[in-house]
Amino acid sequence: MSGKSQSQTSDDQSRSTRFLNGVVQSAKLLHHKAQWSFDSIPLSTKLVSLLLVLLAFGLTVAGIATRSLIWMYMINRTDDQLISQAQIVVTDVNSYNSASLDGPSDYFLQIRDDHNRTMHTPLIPRSNDGTLSVPVLPSSGSKSKVRIGIPFTVAGRVLERDGSPSSTHSSPWRVVALRWINENNGSSGIVYIGLSLSSALGTAQAIMRYFVLVGMVTIVVAMVFGTIFITRAFAPLKRIEKTAAQIAAGDLTRRIPPAPRNTEVGSLSMSLNTMLAQIEQSFHKEEQMNLKMKQFVSDASHELRTPLAAIRGYAELYFMQRQEPKALERADETIEHIEKSSERMTLLVQDLLSLARLDEGRGLDMSRSVRLDQIVHDGGEDLHALDPKRPIQFGHLVILRSPKHAPEETFVSSDLPVISLKADGPKLRQVITNIVGNIHRYTPVDSPVEMSLTVVASSLAPSDVKQMKSEPSSVNAFFTSTLTPLGLSREKKPHYSYVVIRVSDHGPGVPEASLSRLFERFYTADPSRAKERGGTGLGMAIAQSVITAHSGFIAASTTDGGGLTLTAVVPMEVSVAGSAQG
Image (cartoon, rainbow, N blue to C red; front, side, top):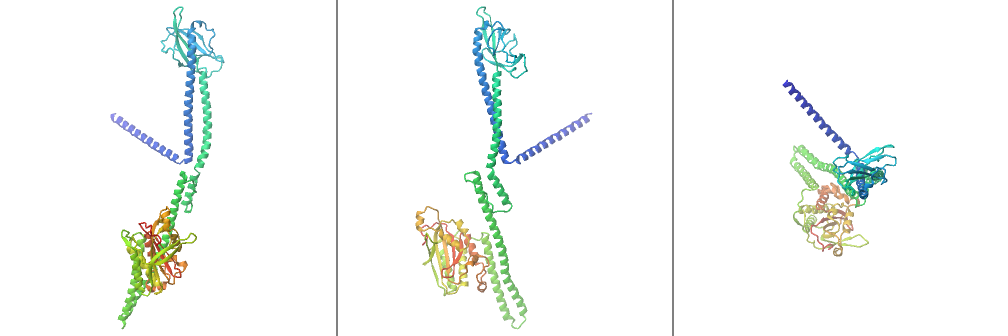
């Protein structure tokens, strides 16, 4: 028997546990569904609903407060009437010896003795429909705890009803109790004087009905105008949503319509448009980089295939010819060709590695101070060693400014100005070496060369200069932004100092359409002569990458009178304000 009861108890506990677990799971499910349903409601609907709830709450509080205020006012007014009338009744209480006496028709009057026993009820008000109603007072002869002279509220009851019942018949009463004394015989007692609150209750109910009606109209009007206003206020966000959907579909050119910047939507639109512009720019850069990378891999494979094919061909030729009588002499020639091809391939691989490091932002040491004038001067000396008959001049540029015309740069022969800046010296030296190598390959040995070095001040920030393309128009745009020494002293605008490196030759030059292509990888203006002189087609691409890594730009233009001019602009860390244009 005990085992059965224990088993039954265990089963009951198990069922209770399962029931509680089911209740908990149901509560979690309902909470999840409620949260999901709330999150799925549009924000405009939530705001309109919140507006209506707050408005209804405010109107309800205002209605309750108004009703309470009016009810208190009516009670105080009734109390004043009761007290003033009670004094008259107490003074003349002996005259109320018959129920048929005339008196105040709206008042209830009941006279009791000292033991609270009812002696007489001379006044019972009758309503317009003939109904008699009285206040519910302490029973006759009971020990009442009524406070003398202080009005109190009691319920009402109907004595006679001639018409249909209504709420006014059972309305509460306001009653005041006073003591009376008969000076003739010395008797005394308590007199109860009451006044129905039906009028006050009707006034309060009428006001509440009016308040409810006005509140409902107010809520309906607020809902209509609130919906219209919130819908119009959310219209810019709807446009942002549509624009975002179009951008998500792949149209990166879409922009959010502008709005006043002092508004939240305007600030959001401006930030999003800026972000979209950067995303589009990054996307296009990525596309261009991928295209360049594919082209680069294709060109590199092609360029490497040539020396590798030559090495393989000459190696096979060597094995074929080594059994002939003159095998040693021919073997030497074959090995010499293999050595040249391997040297060309080695140079090409080194250039490719340099470009790869620069593309990744590696391989630069910007911590040391570099004498740029010495690098340019050493480049000129190297060119003189390669072409002893070539006239080479060093100097600086003078920029002539005119309000109506584009600035003109004039070369002035002089010693190179001493210029020091923090940069990667070997990389800048490689830039000058590549420029000098191109002049040596593609120009006559007796054509003159001018190499200049100048410091200028420009209103363009280094971040803007770095974005300039390698085109002749970029050079004109940069010199247009330069400031004259007079402007530096009078114009209150920020300026940045730059070093301008310019190398001009007077050779055959490059066609206008090919000027911007000089910096493409593996591009050569004269392929046959490039191979003859050992060019790889990567020299100008490396120069461009080095200058860009120094937050500058390089561009090619036509030299006055014929030839090619290369202009490189590199920002300086220290502002040199006094030597802008030499």
